[in-house]
Image (cartoon, rainbow, N blue to C red):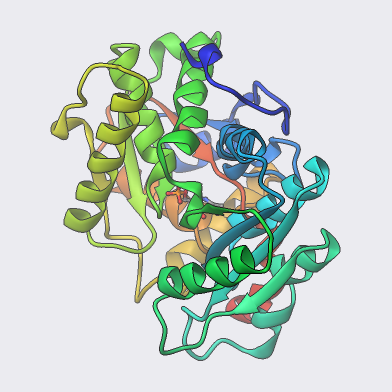
Length: 327
Ligand SMILES: Cc1ncc(COP(=O)(O)O)c(C=O)c1O
């Protein structure tokens, strides 16, 4: 079904699934596995590679010469878009916004911001009193007036095209030799497209695997509504069956004070994954999501016989911008 949609090749797929033996033994709960979407192969990897394969095929089809996207200062989506545009010979304009109050200067210059420059993208800061999407509309109109053909990618690449990438990821998971017995998939959910794509995949492939999103921003209710709506759009686009609202499960206990605000749980999760498995998580998304896995094990949410798959969505390129959060 996904084969019918246009796609460009940007990443390395399928990504591996590994057994987290040491962490599973240490936590004493169910066996935990990890799907390495941090190893998608584009610009240090991450979940946006899968989305961009479908989104940028559409941009090329529309003869775009400039790709415009938006995000928080340390957006991983922006960095992956910058790299993908470089590979495809498209110019890339990134509009960034301040979301983390009181962050030190290093947050504004290193990590993904530095990498955006390395990949040759142009960056503009959204004025603090503006809604970023409105500001982007204005810039796009100016560029159009000056003869360019801009193509806009919404925050996080979360739309019907991006979600095709996570329908495909769900298929990869169910085709994997370990998959028959996965009971749960756990992932970080922000702009919602990754989670919505998995829900669409679960619906299409009639799977019993429970997909749990750990919110890194919104409340349970906000995030569930957003992901459900995205899943509806996604399944309409592929002419699939309707999703079920009960399938959209979000936990919002691990966000802490807010988006990108460091929490003790995130620090512990990041340190545990690094010291027990030699794998880097990130402070904003996968660190908080893995804190969610640890929290659910501690609260006896899982049966000992469950097999939990943690989807590592990437983000470690932001770590240098967060050194202060670990002092
Ligand atoms: C590393 C990482 N993980 C997870 C997410 C969340 O994915 P989504 O925006 O599709 O919900 C993002 C989004 O930017 C991300 O950068």
